[in-house]
Length: 164
Image 1 (cartoon, one colour):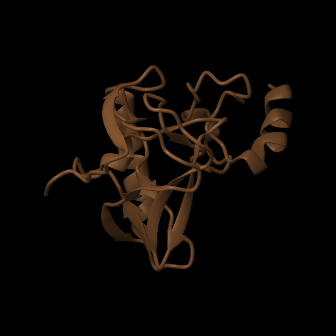
Image 2 (cartoon, rainbow, N blue to C red):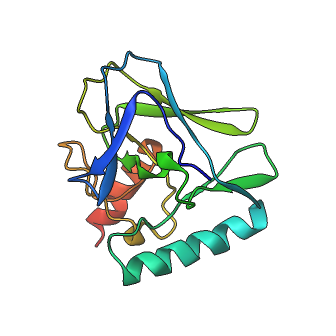
Image 3 (cartoon, rainbow, N blue to C red):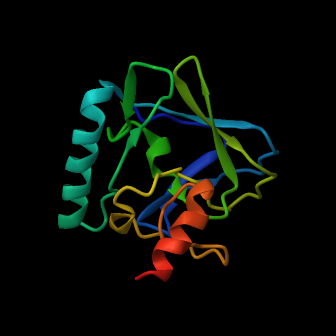
């Protein structure tokens, strides 16, 4: 399959993690940028596949670790690891400029605010705290909590980190 494309993006090296997706042109707030695509997998297989991705990433730090996108309300998740899913290169940030919207079981990335040409596109991956230590954050934001976690989980994460 051909890689997914969008007039709004270009993939290149990222200071956050290996590859990233950058704005090819200025993008206005709430613009649909690209769809996150992949292989639909049964919900029961999603965690197993995610763990396989994590193990591969431990062997090769340039690999992303989890490409499973949990689709609430559907009987499947999306394994976005295939090379043709260009959206898999959008990195996490604790101060994102994009957000996710799920429509009819499909996952779309939108601009959270106006984004300038050349700016790296990011969204909060929304991870829960199970195994958070396996997902250190490299976003570099002044708001960074040190791990990839849903913003709603930050107070709980901060309490866990105080206890360490």
